[in-house]
Image (cartoon, rainbow, N blue to C red; front, side, top):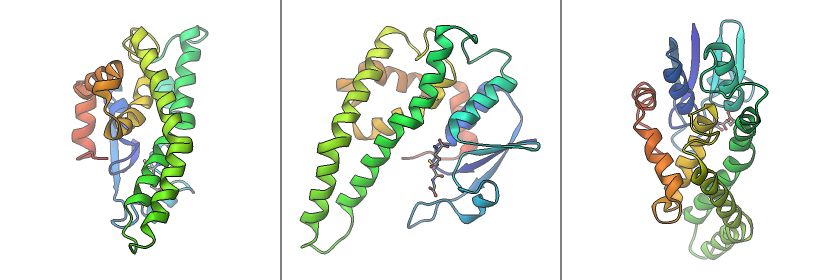
Length: 221
Ligand SMILES: N[C@@H](CCC(=O)N[C@@H](CS)C(=O)NCC(=O)O)C(=O)O
């Protein structure tokens, strides 16, 4: 039996969506974040040394890293669905976006989240200007302009086609859903990024996406 090691409110939500798209039977092993630190519990390290989520086990095989999990599940179980044919330019695009989602876009979202935490941390009033200045420097000097650059790039891509690799949804869209959902909580997609907003709305009403949410439990950033 395929097992998803699922941390609440995390990247593993998109793996549940993919499993629902594929119509596979699977079991969810649930883990809760620490209430103070938001970190995963130590039990996850018994599954993979880094103790991050998602991780899946499929018989004797353990797969970590969302991008690899998406590739593994699609290559093993999709019968050619959710992936452009190997050897085509679209297949290279598909692999590009899978790497891009975690390698380029997600780190920017993480910097933005951490800077927001630093800025809003409960510190003595005389320290506040220092924490605010550190957060502002990181955001204005690096993360902010890069987030804009990437959102402009994603918007331009979706102005050309409904999905990231053309007219059909693929695993790349599932990978990109998480950082786009994260961006939607920090940026007004509706005013500046209409194609990204349409993507965001389109995925959330898909039956498999909704079944994934039902199985994963309430999902909140
Ligand atoms: N690049 C990894 C990132 C995994 C990761 O950091 N997952 C987060 C959940 S969104 C996590 O486990 N956080 C809890 C922690 O760091 O303890 C992937 O895509 O799977």
